[in-house]
Structures are given as structure tokens and as C-alpha cells.
Image (cartoon, rainbow, N blue to C red; front, side, top):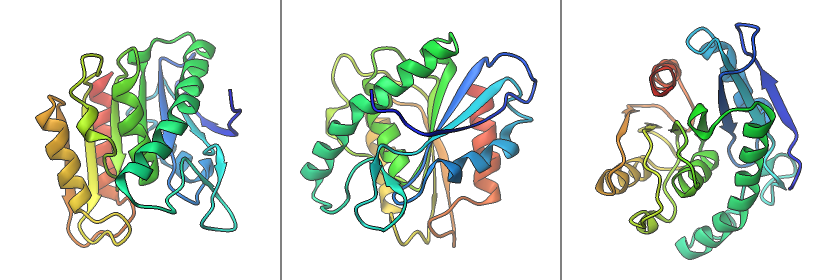
Length: 215
């Protein structure tokens, strides 16, 4: 598999991890970005280990940072092809983590921001075994028309989005929520007036609440 540089935090309890919170960053960022959420969630999830990898590819739209897939083309079919190309890398990485910590899929949750959310929402439902859930900030749904297949895993999903998001417009939140609910996923979350492409305190608190309830 592709080896991903990974940043780690926790468990706060000091014991062996009982849950994995896998954080997938956005375009042009790196794993150090989202690992900063760990201290805010450690009290709610004292037995969780937080893991935040660098995405597998150098960003092709900036001189620094990484990407899960290219956004040079925003055509839906191009995006779908790009995401499908990265899915095996992420799946293999997840399998390695579950084996490393001797945990089952139901003990791992995906947390994404922007492109990391898109990757999470594509990968999680298509895995062989059901994950605990997906928490997605400021992202969107790619390949939603494929979610009616017999092998789709339907786990809890929480979507959080700023209404003033200039990078991924809030319409992506509404479209994702509607499609996921139509396919039988339990979806929670909220939008925040005036919030741009970022995560605020309300979103962090809502994320902690969601994650603590799905394990």
C-alpha cells in the first residue's frame, strides 16, 4: 500500500485505543491540520486514538500540501473517476490501522474536511464492513447515484457546513443530505449562518457529541 505520513494523538486515558478517529484533511493541506481537533474531543473520547494522515498525492493546485484527488476538473464524471482511483489507497490504509490496533470496523469513524469529507462519504458506504460513522465538515457527496446497491453500508452520518462557504457552497450540504436520506442513511448535522469554509466552535462541539454517541 501507499505509506501515508500520519500524525497521532491520544488516547487520553493512556490505555490501548478502543476507537479510531481517522481525520482526512482538505485540498492543499496536510495531516497536521485536523490533528489539532484531538485536544477538543479527547475528554468526550478518552479511549480514542486520533490519526490524521497526509493525503497520498502532492497538491497539483498549490506549491505545498497534499490532495486525495485532483480538482483540476469539476466535471462530475471526472471527480467520480478520481475518487474511485484513490478509494483503494484509503481502504488499504484503514485495514492496516484496524489490524495494527486489533479493532473492528465498527470501532473506526471517519472525519473529513472539504475534500476529506468527499473522500469519506465515498469510501465508508462501500467498505465490506460497516464503520461507526462519518462526520463531514464543509464537503459534498460524489457518486451519490451509486448508493442504492445491495452492498452499501449505511452508518450514521453528520454533516456540518457554513452558509457563507465560498469554496464548497452550502448547496452541496443540502444535496448530500437529501441524497443520503433518500438512500436510507441516518443523517444529522447543521449549517451555520455567516460561517465560511472552516470549522467553528459550534461545529467542534457538535462533532464531539456525534462521535461520542456512535461508539
